[in-house]
Image (cartoon, rainbow, N blue to C red):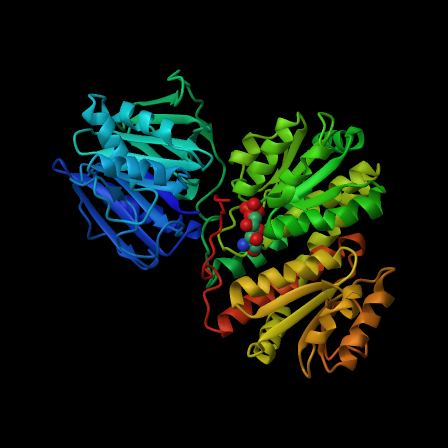
Length: 591
Ligand code: M6R
């Protein structure tokens, strides 16, 4: 949450680059934005409420070689210009952008107030420039003052700071992402994510937790915040290309990413077989295998409980990552935690990993973003290779996660080739499904139900987590009240919610639980529900039938795709922006 950016080097359009860089970070927060740049020894700035996407930065200074920027997802303080970043000290000689939370900000703020500092925002961030100023007053140089300030902060954060008397950027991280882009001979970028500088360079260096850096655009130094020990870094070439990170011919990233699934599932399946088999061995030998993730990724974990049970007859335990620490009693050094995350930066997942590591357990991660914090902190990683996912609503990452988890279950059952064959068939089924007629049909269905206030989704077996996921998708982009249930649970309470023409989506497959879920659908129909069946076969109970291919144990993957498309059109037809839903951000780096 929140995107941060910094540049120093020989280019003289640093302010313009900050605006452009922030546009690619907007998925991390979009309630307000701000930049500061150094010009003739002063820090100029611009801060605005709202999204940066429509802002024309080209009129900004073309005479500056150092800039910082921020796009905000509010935590401390409302959405106001004062609370937007950069935050400054009183004489505006120091500017700081920040992603994360300084948990001890009240204590530091009170201390600084007692020394006469005056604060103008409600943010936790504002303590940073004031505290840095205090250390500078004691005779420390700028970089050392940032280091001393960082030693005081508790919580998870990434910061970039600049000072009027120094031609350097100083940045530090503990818990929130920060990546360096190296444009050889021209300068250095720092940003929460690589798309912010992808058009200039694909050479990166990763800052790790507890580290800081200082750069003047010509050289860069990394060191440990606590010990001051120097930490030289490798330069790494990343493979992401700008086109992949762009929405191309589509009106929204969400639709583009749904369509990307024509190829992305096959990329997820294309794993190094030796690695998958090693992971299967690790699961087989573990004393207790746990799965943890959040939101959509959590639903992939939940589906995996069924995959491992049905295909490999192996028991694994899913818990939402934010609840995982309560399970620490069951962890031992021989236990395995499997975490699933698109971004690889989710704070709750990182915390779950810390809990597992504290018990000496091993961690396997299934991530999309290579080089992310979760990727780098894991003992083993499988990448889903979905390509950049920018829409807040996760779509292609989910199907990639499901594919990798299903493949792992097959590997554990000693049937890797069977699993691979199935998933490659599923990939071509998805390619066939996402044709213009199919999409139009879902657009028309959205038109029929877009005015409804409530919508329910039921499923059984692996379609149960997909019912929960369907509800997330519909809620987050269309703001319709949607809820998912296990079909068998209806009669234990939720059925009381059903009224005449309440739309109810029934997710089904050609499997042993089909009779059960159809009988749940009959129960809904008897209460007047409008039953929308998503299944390979039609049924007289369905008022509407959305045909999906028969994908056997991979049914969850094909069943969720029409719901993604439907959610997209519900959002658009209700006049909402599916890429940037209210109150949300793509990468949730706070607990
Ligand atoms: O990056 P992650 O996969 O760890 O993110 C987890 C959730 O925040 C994410 O799936 C969220 O639920 C999506 N907005 C759902 O579409």
